[in-house]
Length: 336
Image (cartoon, rainbow, N blue to C red; front, side):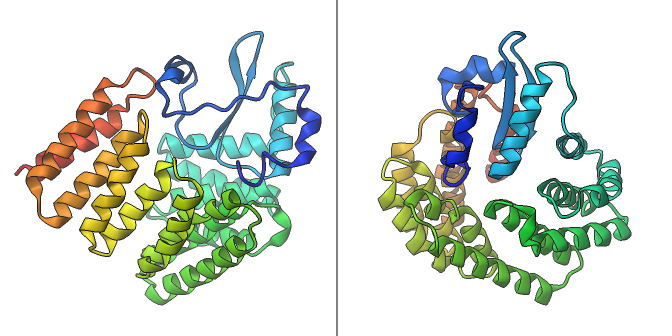
């Protein structure tokens, strides 16, 4: 969204209606905000009523320009006590059911709601989130029906999705084929997605736009067993954004996947030098994985202890107890 949506000039007409604010969820300076307005996924878009200081609209996920404009309209109306638009209400319902792990209801409601919003960005979101729930329940009929809906939206150029959201639809289809144990089907979809991402990255007009495809390209090449294809693009992103830890962290992951542990640690060194605040936990966690894969369990364990200690030192709003539990389980396992 930062590369393609927020710079769109058509949003300028909303400038006088809203005070625009971006919150870095890794920055300790934002602790009090994050305590009051917890973030469960990124990106999270909120409209906050200045009178009540309440989030009258909360939307988890990215949005195209038309979607964002609808969210802004909904937010303005919500400050006057009016309900959200039907599409946003439906999306938020499915996301809430998914977050609460009410998987059966999540899939059932997605199937019920999808026909009403088919062919729109809301319809695509409902189908994709519903499928992610259906894949974790035994009811195969719901999985197949939602997979068809996701396929239809992935192939529909008129639903105004941003490329990242369209990529997420294809990854949902990969997950469905994985559940069906269809190796050929998984590979076909991944290759289709890789071709789509390469074409879109090649058409990018700014370094930020090109880099916005890195996450999905790294993932699909890893799943295709072609991680080496990710290296040139990540090296270019590192050159374009020399103070950003993200491309170096991604390079570390890629080199680890390829079994090039010294290169992975060198990239991790650069990431550690650039990372600030809460994201350091993630860098240390991956660094521990590299040491473990290299066979150095002693350093891997100490790196996990460092990650746990750093996470516990973070203020409320940034300290993640779920991550702490996961890190301690990894430490216990690696110390055995």
